[in-house]
Length: 147
Length: 212
Ligand code: SF4
Image (cartoon, rainbow over all chains, first blue to last red):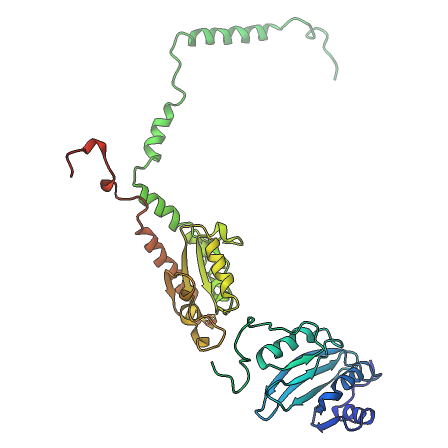
């Protein structure tokens, strides 16, 4: 087992590798630009010393001005974890690239976020509703959704 | 073992002959008596074991004492239901500890839990697969009215919106005692059912002309 890295070190590695991709760095989270999400995620998963091989969960938050999709990643090998975030600023058809190709566990969770929050994951092989039925009006976890 | 050549003979011994003679005498003697009825003892037992009662009573007794349940436990109330099955509360006292994986063998549905609209068609299907006569106990606030999830976009506000319910057991979750009380209420309800039509309403050729 190699040494666990702190979030700060991980973020600085990301910054070196993808200059300009990191929008905002928190204490243990990093906000990346939506178009560099896939590259950053792949780097986090495969780079030596990082090896984020486990996706804990995907969730999404509605902040009215924007949607934030949150990915919690853990490296079982190196025993460190980080929270990855992306934002989409439109309400009509918010789109985020799918990370289903990197972590298979993202499959159902991206469908859940799509179902309840209405965020489209580009490149997902089977993006359809999972909890609600086809034809349900709207996406109920959005703040402006009303029954 | 050494063989005693004196006794080892192809002829039968004197004792055997004697025994045989006794048996024959006995059969001969008994042949003069009448043979007793081998079923005579039954009379006594019939008197003790046959009860005369009404068809309604027997059928209701059988139905209420063997309520087998179909599986429908979508949420937390199911835990309490499992507790009522366990030795501490011991539902088998009421003849209904058997849970049926197949609804075709069940006659009671205990709806223990929150039902989502996505699940609702399946619950109704299970209900439809149960053979008549069948009963439903709505267990818990969610089963009665949707409970704390009533205003949710995906929760059925009460099972009685999709299937007919006989007994409501309130609580969140109801204690096993409450569930058992509900089951006893259902048993009382079953006991009042009339299985046969009123016989006096049927056409009776013997009474023709008398009763018009
Ligand atoms: S009534 Fe309470 S315990 Fe029962 S399913 Fe609903 S929330 Fe759970």
